[in-house]
Length: 242
Image 1 (tube, rainbow, N blue to C red):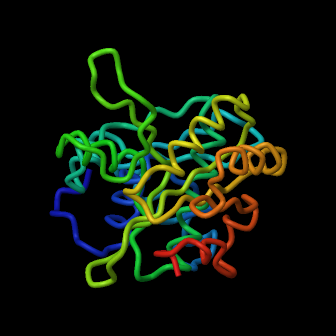
Image 2 (tube, rainbow, N blue to C red; image 1 turned 180 degrees about the horizontal axis):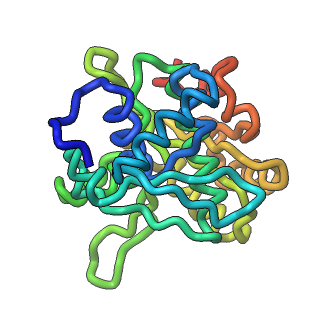
């Protein structure tokens, strides 16, 4: 681990902090986020791995490798409370898709901050209330049962407006489950709207669920492939993402 204090804005500090915030990142997402070559991104990640700040994992051979912050890395960037992200074969594809969408959104929305579910969970626990989550009824103890988005598009200071929730859907949920979540989002007044970034096989079932709960004015469905690029702005129909 580096013996010096973290240098804010340095490539290594930025890469480790972003990894801690997102849970896991890929070389491809880092390259897109900073508009650098794959070779440059590989060098940055390699230095962080060599210093023990990041760890590399590839549970799926046909998917990108994922990098997570180690305990040393989390401490180094002051994000120890977020904890280590556990990468498994079951969540690897979703983690990679989420960070790809996050990187693309950062390049499209310089006046917003793209946050992750881990940060939101910590913030909501700390404040004891929902900040950008939908309510799905109540827990047995009477506390709200929340559904947190995969990503949040937070307006920067001075921009104003509500945050935008972002969901990354790779697999088809049951129609009842999907409708329940869409209904909760349609009723949620903590966010300006919801952007669903959907895999091809999910688009039609998701559109049906949105229509079923009459959530078209609050929920936007965009192709995942479109959301993972830095061209255009598929979130433009959501009020605070314009």
